Image (cartoon, rainbow, N blue to C red; front, side):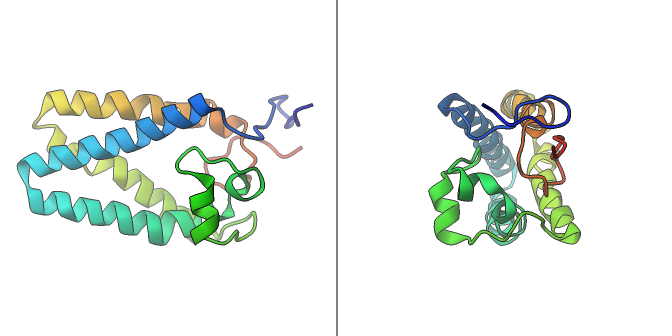
Length: 162
């Protein structure tokens, strides 16, 4: 029987293959389109954006936010990458990240979405493709996944503890 939060929403114990494919395709899709859109106008800045994403996620988002999430460590599930990858390279750090680290991780994720738009506004077809990947992904989190999430330390979590 699924555990429910105070709002009567069942909390997720895992994610379906469909969930994983849709969220990873959306997240990595808009990131790749963003890289390509920047590259078409300025290859050096596209390289800088790639480093921003790689360094930002490997040094801030994953260790400061994802390593506190119970899904990869207790349920072998993750919407962004294979859970085994997280377990292999990042130790579980407990349920509650430090507020400053949550803010930094969210700033890196916001930058991943916002930065490419400065170049994509000059290429409307790519801007549309970027948001065709991005919008459903970004909407799914607060309106679906965050309402059923067990990562109560995440600043995006909308589920209430029972």
